[in-house]
Image 1: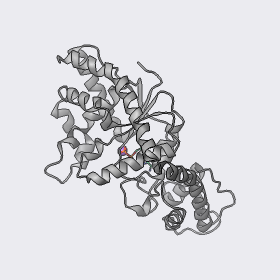
Image 2: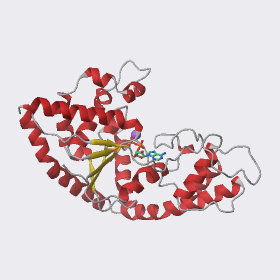
Image 3: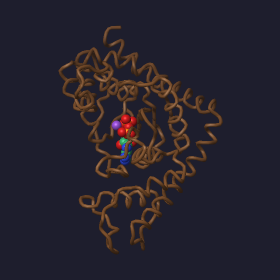
Length: 318
Ligand code: ADP
Ligand code: NA
């Protein structure tokens, strides 16, 4: 097993947000040794997609991860490591429709439609392959993905029993609750890369765009010097702004009005995004360099995962 190995995939199905930065990319940047960070472009095709948009979002996200400081980890695109799809097929020969039918995310995403892409249905199996290929000892996972990682464990155990000890069965850990950034226009839901632009701050938003979005952020109608305080239940909008401010290194000391709070948030967010935007501009001017980084990363992933794939193939009878 590989006790320290880190593995994380981001789906290029939208544009990276401040939520992704504070909740995922920031922590990833602190754990870059023996780390495999991928863009799951195959996962981005489980619902209706536009090929050109997928391509451009993938390139943008690839460039942004580098710009955001992930320059020591192994960065790769899932589609450039064929072992992911190959192992997924072997695991499909291990999985049953009964268990995929129970996946809550599939039920939710498919709700109201009488038919979906088969890849939406088999998504958790590809995710199992994504994980098992790298043999991480533990997988930190948020509540929304927990069921999928439990399926990953079930498939690994079943395969090992039926065909021989091939897979490391990963332990599931719940990551210490990091920053959870809420949507600015609806602070009861998570800021999301697929949401409409109004409530999400994207990493490449220019300062005036950040200012406009923050100035329109939902607060509440309380007034007076004690209105600026955190209370997740009754003041979700203000709480979110205070948390974003703190996560971006700002301070709410002495702030007594929502206007002043929003100005401080704007300043802190812009200061956090500026260096990323600058590095992004430099990197985007040299796309060949970015592709080379991902090509090198994919080559390393192919090398690291080849023995496991070969063992799985041999065990299953190929
Ligand atoms: P994916 O489809 O790639 O899982 P998400 O954008 O839902 O896309 O999540 C990618 C990562 O970013 C996950 O680790 C998730 O927890 C984190 N993340 C996403 N949105 C937020 C948010 N609003 N606040 C904090 N972390 C977030
Ligand atoms: Na997600």
